[in-house]
Picture (cartoon, rainbow, N blue to C red):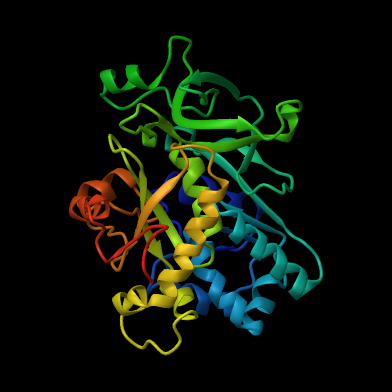
Length: 362
């Protein structure tokens, strides 16, 4: 296994290191990271090490994707021995999952398993896992052996709570925090929502349905399911988008701050040699995003999933101010907190030249 996950994290320590020890395997420490400027080290290492089981966070798989797509020798090294791909820490987009399957068939003539699970530091880290192939990337599977899950209705969603021998008994010297983390039956409250992939067959697994705490209401009182809509937007705007932060708490309509994949966007603007701002300002890119926004709008059923405006960011999410974690996942609240001026610009009337709407002049 080639792995960069820090060992002080429960996934990197409890899970990844001990998986190798238990199986008598070989652990190669990857000095790369799933961020620009550091993913190149992972690419270099994958030329030397062909893993049999490959872990990464969704942002890591996304960052690797363009290198694998354009480099046949790297694909051969990556897929040569691999039996399982596993992601955790956040949800991977359907586009990314499908691309890895497509490249597997192209490179080695067969599909491989792209599996995942759901848990937290408090569950050490395993709680729910999918050990079978599913057409839906968001399917996180079923509770592990010896673990009990409870689904609690919460504002139109099903909140996941778990109990089992792997769950921490509480937080060190924090009785009030501990009391808030468990319900009256002793189930730990993960803060995640799930849904059944098939309501008529629970055995097909649970689908991740977003973080309860990230959902919000529009000024009309309509609830917005951010996890579900964010995932859909990433799929619709693929491969040009790395992440999306939805805006709109107490506003009349939904907006979005888009974090682009600049290298993918350059394919639409090959003559532009400047920085991210020059690429983002190009009329061809703006027209493409406007067309994708129109596609998303046609699928919308109401104000809770109709995005009225968006703005493409030129600065990536910052780890220094907590907009992104070292696992590459984004913190929606911190992005909105640190980019309030951009959110105000997004909703200004008349629209700023940087804002894209269905009526934008391109």
